[in-house]
Image 1 (tube, rainbow, N blue to C red):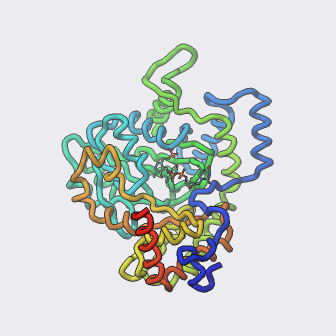
Image 2 (cartoon, helix red, strand yellow):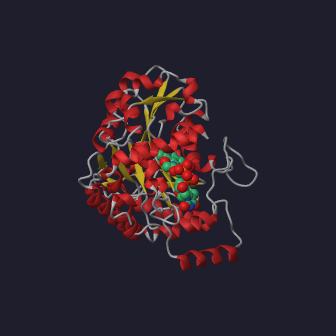
Image 3 (cartoon, rainbow, N blue to C red):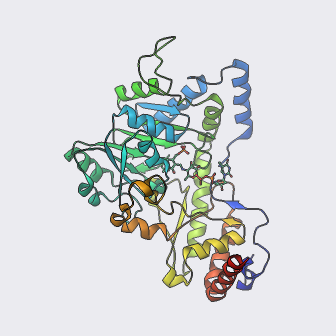
Length: 406
Ligand code: T4K
């Protein structure tokens, strides 16, 4: 552990970790319970297509979130695509650029233009004040993201949507288990989309769901996720294959049973980071509000180069050299990824907060795959980098010079 700054790997020491420490290692639940479910699945020879585990998973999620319907799907990207289609969105939909690329892809995939909106730099969520200027006669909806699990300004978004007759849909991929006021995330807008990807708070390996109180919408999505079949040989709508298989549902059900434990470990790690990073100039941790019952699945730091003496990317290099694979989510912003970069080359002009944040954000490892001792060690590396920032900067510059001349 770098108790003295000379121990840093970029300065020639051995890395702090022998094995890579990832952001996004899955939270794993009770192995024996999962294996028992797999035995049951094999015994009943039912692997997919609205199987018992999938239906149980849907029921458990709907009950927990206090919504009328949960439509489980193969992943959140397909769930977004199906929700967007079932809600009959078309033309243009307003969406943040500071999100995972799937949020925009789910629109573009269906020839709907994502219109990128700037974020509030304090919350990282879509800035409702910036939406009205983007509305055109072709706008049909707002697709807002509860980034890092922190709820959007839901009521304000609702007002804007109502005033302009727009559909309000939420990408709640990060926000499973979180609350807004008295309700769980999942019960807002026309529908909300959850992810149960391996890297998420609760995972099904791959998995997603749309939750809604709208009976008609739920029925439409149940059809759409199964090719439009309404019984044997009877296709009554357009559809695709968005079903959740039994293996995933079994994993999801098992992980749901460990939700409290995962939340506790994430919370402990978050507060350990908070304690150990406090006082390092230029490194601040995005805070969560306890009353929103955060899942703490993302530990998000912001790096201020002028105070730290190192830029975010330099700090990433320091951490990677130590085998700490911190991530720059969601750099560089979706509008700077293809096809959006070519389609909308000037989009960045309206996204100053997105641009600034994408240069500052650093996501640190957490979850049940790391220990509190790991967190302490990671923070010690960051503190050591801050203490020796001139030497670190010089070493990194030398390294990139060597790469350029090689
Ligand atoms: N909307 C939002 C706001 C999202 O963030 C996402 C997904 C979606 C929609 C779409 O949800 P899904 O269609 O995926 O259900 C990861 C995830 O693949 C992605 O699900 C997630 N957001 C995004 C934030 O992160 P990458 O490109 O960073 O994945 P990858 O493969 O680099 O994995 C991250 C790290 O996790 C790896 O370094 C290693 C570790 N890992 C990963 C997996 C899959 C493991 O240790 N074990 C594993 O099984 O996107």
